[in-house]
Image: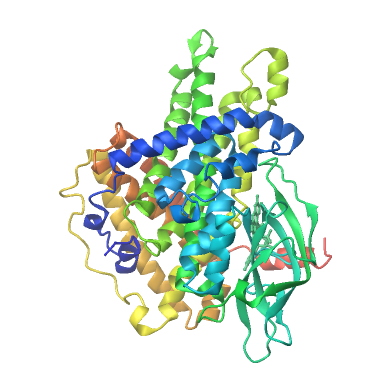
Length: 553
Ligand SMILES: Cc1cc2nc3c(=O)[nH]c(=O)nc-3n(C[C@H](O)[C@H](O)[C@H](O)COP(=O)(O)OP(=O)(O)OC[C@H]3O[C@@H](n4cnc5c(N)ncnc54)[C@H](O)[C@@H]3O)c2cc1C
């Protein structure tokens, strides 16, 4: 059985043995993956100029068709349906490669492959819905996942309704969806909707052909980053969806079915972490270019202490994202390591944000100067400011950053109020006398490992204290600050543990020093989260904000 870091968090004891041996990609698969990445990047480079796309805010004509022709719109789909049949890790590497050339192209591919109909296929049981979706995938339909609505993504149920027709052969879809990736070009949309039944409110997924009467793209949505990404504000006005295109599960909300939830979590993981790691890597390359051509007072910039720290921190952040992704995907099944995959959205996008932010500072004026302006001056037109805009977007798309920590905290702690057989233990496991005893780590990393183990103990005890304070789930849910902080602590502890496990595997050159740099930074962030956690006297945030929002001064 595949192990999960949740075992450690639930026990309050770092299960170091479960992180060993650290997963590795099969060398033959790696070679095949490298070749495919090279092909995709070459295809993109021949068709798409990222600067031009940023300027005109549109993808080149013919790009989508070219990607489809080579199977890149069906990466994980079985070959018998015209797909490439790739593993989740291989899909990750391919989309990351595309995002390295153009984050917009990466997100386009992410939306299609990890959120659209091809991603849902493994969750569909044999039957008419699966047959319909398979046929449309084989026809290479462009797809997207339409869930967010103008009223807000975080509402528990969609406002869009699917009303059964009198003869029972179809549903009529009414509502609006907003910010839908690929929505303005999609041929087959996956749309969440509620069946308006006073006795049993059910949320279903409708596979909607966008050629159906009543469907319209109200407007194209344009963002500060990811320029050119097809994104739409969509309307469904009595769209007739045949019964065989509507998917229900035993759960009242299809999104809560274990397989659909696993597909959604894996998809969000890959869609968000691929551009994140690609942006971080490009920033690193740009940093090297800048530092190596710059001197200050006749001394190479790379010789200064602060600059060395910046470059090292970026290297370590990239090492951390890569390590977590390998842990999440290699040798795992669809439903494995769901918690790790869920929190990786923030692990990857916050790391990418740190990298982009420090790269802007490193570049000084050139960090906020447009490539066109750089070209006019005759300096390398590195698009740092564009990647900075893209990186900021990643903290919103797929769930706002603090909200993602909030949900992670809720997922962890709500289990303490669930059925007894699934409830985490009510005690903290005995401490391991020395978790670092046999770890193949440098003295500094052994110290980090002991610190991680101690913090995992403290984390478990804190969860128990918070649960003891809230005798019911509704009471816990009001305590948003604690949930956000615990969600943040959990992802930092996961990343630190996984980074150390990878370093101990001696698989990566410089793994030990990368882990050391990463853990030092992570421990500063952990200290900050712990400092904010205790209950006690706090400023009256509610009073201040309520007074202002209700029209006070
Ligand atoms: C580039 C991009 C691509 C996207 N692609 C898609 C897509 O393909 N399909 C799709 O369905 N959506 C997509 N989205 C939408 C995206 O998932 C949402 O924008 C995001 O989840 C935030 O939701 P919202 O904009 O509706 O804000 P809201 O959910 O309305 O949130 C507004 C504010 O309220 C806060 N908030 C919400 N709930 C709570 C709470 N309980 N307690 C405290 N604060 C709360 C939020 O954190 C936020 O600060 C995309 C967005 C972007 C930017």
